[in-house]
Image 1 (cartoon, rainbow, N blue to C red):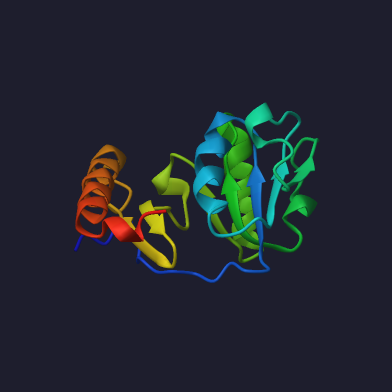
Image 2: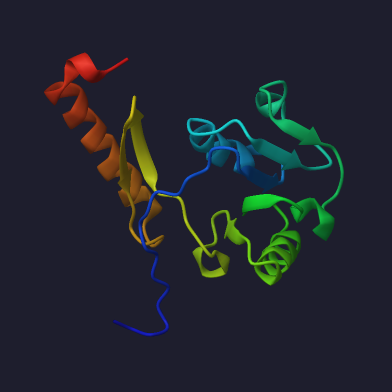
Length: 157
């Protein structure tokens, strides 16, 4: 294995009663939040603007620009702005505090990545390409979803 290659260990991490922080409240954050909200509602969004699709869903909405104190109490952080400089600052500040951080759409800066998932009831299937081929991960996930739906139709909500 190439020592310079980023390697991500797949695991399930307990998030009940843990604050998940999103720095950024636009479409980049929306995509990730749509997955995370299947597991927890303890989501805080810090952003000067938050898109309508994220408003009023029970998340903590903080309308302001990012500052390091926003990380207080965070368990996981998603740097999900469309400004690379801000995302890097969030990453650096989170790492300095020992908080795992995902810089959305940038595996090189991320301490963790999110797989493509299928969740039905208590069952979850996760597909990951080690962050190298997101499109292929989504394709595999969709094919697996079709298989699950055809094989166990009674398990589908």
